[in-house]
Image (cartoon, rainbow, N blue to C red):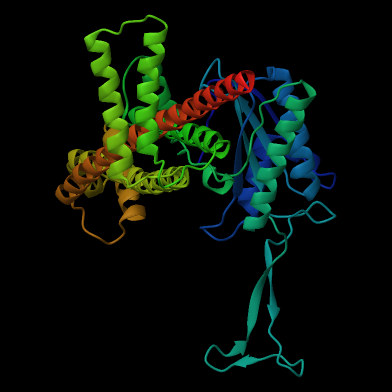
Amino acid sequence: MTHDFTHKGGVVHSEILLPSNAPAEYADRSSLWNAVEAVEKSRNSQLAREIEIALPNELSQSECIALTHEFVQKTFVNEGMCADICIHDPNREQKNIHAHIMLTMRPLNEDGTWGDKQRKEYVFDKNGNKIYDKKKRNYKCHTVQTTEWNSREKAEEWRKAWADYINDSLVQRNITDTVDHRSYARQGKLVKPTIHMGVAATQMEQKGKRTIKGDTNREIKVINYKINILLKKLEAIDNRLAKMREVSERDSLALMLMRFHENGIEFNQVRGITLSTLKKAEKLRDLSHLIAFVQRHDIRTLAELKERSKETSEALWLHKETMKKQQSRIKVLEELLTNYEHYKNNKAVYQEWQSITKLKKKDKFYNEHRGEITLFEAAKKMFDTTIGDKKITSKSWRKELAELKQANQNELKEIDRLAEDVASMETIAYNVERLEKYEDKQQEVQRKNIYEME
C-alpha cells in the first residue's frame, strides 16, 4: 500500500528525531516506516503509537515548534523511540495549532537493529524448577514487556509532562492561564467537557452550517455556564451567612423578612418618599414569594438556610452526573442513527461490488462508487465496534433518543428551578444582613439618646 499525504493542508513543520543508536537512513520518513513494516511478521501488529498534542495559541508558531521539539526529544527520543513530528497551523486548518507525533513501538539495540517488544519467561515452582503443562505439552511461561511504553502509568506520565511544559512556557511569558492534563471529573470540577468537533464539523460551523456536534457543544456550554453561576452564588451565600448572628426560633427568618419589609416602608416615609400602589404591590409580592419559600422548605433559622444551600449544591452535582450520562448515550445513539442511514442507503451498492468476480470490472465499479462503498464500510465497522453481534434496531434507537432528549430537557428545567431557589436564598441572605445592620444602628442611636438623657 502507498500512503500519500502530499495534499494535506496546514502542515507548517515536520521533522524526524532519532536516538543516537538509530541508523542514519531512518531520518528519511519512507525509510523509517518501511523498516518498521518490514520487521513486523504478524498481520495485526501495532506499527506505531500516535500522540496528538494541543499547542498554546499564546505562543508564536516558531515557539510552538521549539516547544514541541524539546518535549519530544526529552520525553520520547531519549527513551529510545524514533519520533515523526508534524505540526498543523490554525490559520490553514483547525482552530487550535496542534502536533501529531508518530512513535515507534520497538526499542533499538546498540547496533541499531530493532529489539523485541516483549519476551517470554518461564514460570518456576517453589524449588526453582520449570513447570511443565501436560495439556499444552510445553513449559509454562508468561509474557514480559521489554519497555514500559505500553503502560497506562506511562501515558499518564507523558500527559502530565506535556502540561508542565506548556505551563512553564506560559509562566516565562508572564501568562497566568494554566492547563491541566486531568479531566474535569478528576479535578473535582462540576462542568461538563465539550466534545471534539473534528475538521469537517469545524469547517461547516465556520461556514454558518449548524452540525449535531456543534449543537451538542453549545448545549453543554449553556449547562456549564448555568451551573458555574449557581455554584458561585451559593458560595457567596454561604460566606454571607457565616458572618451573621444565628436566628432564634422565636425570631424566625419569616418574621425578619416581614420586619425588613416594614422598615423599608417606614424609611421611605421618613424621607418623604411616597411609593406608588404598583410599587407597593411589587414589594409585597416579593415578600410573599420569600416567605412562601422558607415555609415550603421549613426553613426557620440561618443554620437551616445553610443546610438548604448545601442540599442545593449536592442536587446540582447529581443533575450534572445524570446529564453527563444522558449526553454520552445521546451522542452514541446519534452516531448509530447517522451510520444507519449510510448503511441502509449504500448496502445495495456494496453488495453489488462484492458480487463482481472479475478484477478489472470490480476495480472500475469501486472507482465509480468509492464514496458509497466507503460510507457503508465505515458504518459497518462502527456497528461491529459498538453493538457487535446485536441486531441493528433503528426504531428502538430513535425511541430511546427521543426519551433521552426529553429527560435531558427535564433535567434542564430542574436546574432552572434550582436557580429560582438560589435566587430566593440570595435575596433572603441579603435582606437579613441589611436588617441586622439597620437594627444594630437603631439600637446604637437609642443607647446614645438614653446616655445623653441621663
